[in-house]
Length: 131
Image (cartoon, rainbow, N blue to C red; front, side, top):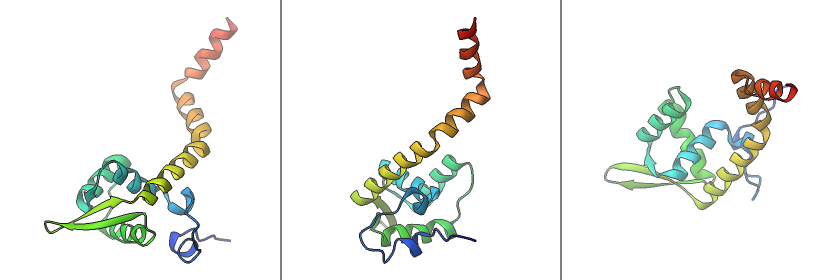
């Protein structure tokens, strides 16, 4: 059984409910995070996402997503000097903050265990307690 978690199906038309971090999606959360730090145009946004994700994000992925975020009221666009500049809205910043908080709470234990397991910091700490 497959569950469709797309933003369009579960958010648009559901009234005032805001998207959760899973409905919002990691890439969309990253776009809101970048735009909450600076307003920018699509090409710079693609470069920032590539640097953040270490993977290329294509125009075919980015621009439909920006349009969706705009429809949700999370992003607004402004035409300046033949470029379209994207800005996060106050609602977008609030949704991004809540999504990041939920994401951090959800994955903190996994991340902490993974990082400490890789560096063996936890093992060294426990070994010192035993001595």
